[in-house]
Length: 448
Image (cartoon, rainbow, N blue to C red):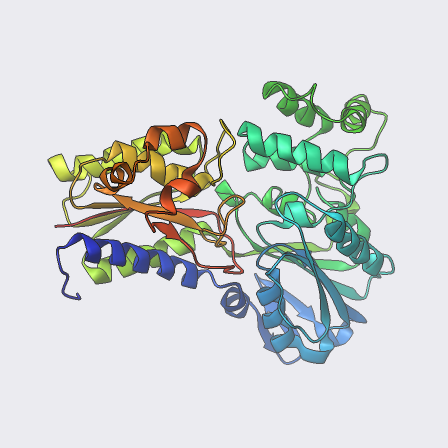
């Protein structure tokens, strides 16, 4: 165990060290190397074995924030065995590759570049045959990047629908249900495009529960949702009337049986498919826990499946931190509490921020005046909402520091402006693009 100083500055430094260890544990390149083996001309992964000498072509396709380093590991492993490839990644998340092309595009709101990249993927798969192997790389962000609107749907229609869903607090499961039914690639349709080739999907999870049909909107797995589900989601959040007409028309026609559904279990498209989960939030939390223990904070992972409104979940999390101080339950100080998942934000103003920054602002208010606690939330992808920050950290003195600068924390929370609250306090966590994404990490560090 390393010696610790009991001061707040050291507590904050240790919290950041724990967070960065979580990021390192889900490095996409290392994830591929851990799971794939090339032995005697055969590729072994997830209990599957592919005789590469029997493959006529090896095609690599996919989308997401983390797929460029995943592809780099594939190129290092397979070299010239790769015939061609195409990936769509978020702006700033590309890497120079030898055989696989990369298209950078907009995220979280899709743009024309994403459409162009996805259409190129579909074109590459057009001639796939029985002796071809298609390796599909999927990670967080893939839903917004693998964008090929269905017939009759314009890109701006999908952009509007996406913006409405992001603003109303819909979960990623709900958002992706909509996306799958407005796309030519999502919801198992990429596998349908590659049929009859064998499709190996290597997946880095960014969704609660690691549901394969939700990660990247499940382009290579059966879709459990139907058109009627999409309609009910839009109605539940009272945004059906604000949804573009072409989107409503398509969903209504699909629910009425006029349009074909996305492919379901038993579809021939999945007969030669295999899916391997190469990384998840729980792995990041395990690594964070190991680092916390080494630094002298006995850890407890509460859950890797946290969902809910960011500001409300934060209050509950902060309450557990206070309980540790007052009653030594569920741990006695020093201690590290960890959670993972993905909360949501219902926008209430014109401010700037993200779910992690709002989480920490709500927690800072709840912990105002509390000693020996640091509260942190950060996105493993390095971006939180439309900002350059991954998240933020706070302690019991954060609110007092803000008030000394003339800032009202309640006003910032009310207008969803957490970024501009933490920026002058120098409490934003800025990592730059991490090229990974396994949801968010939430942490309370309690000093002795």
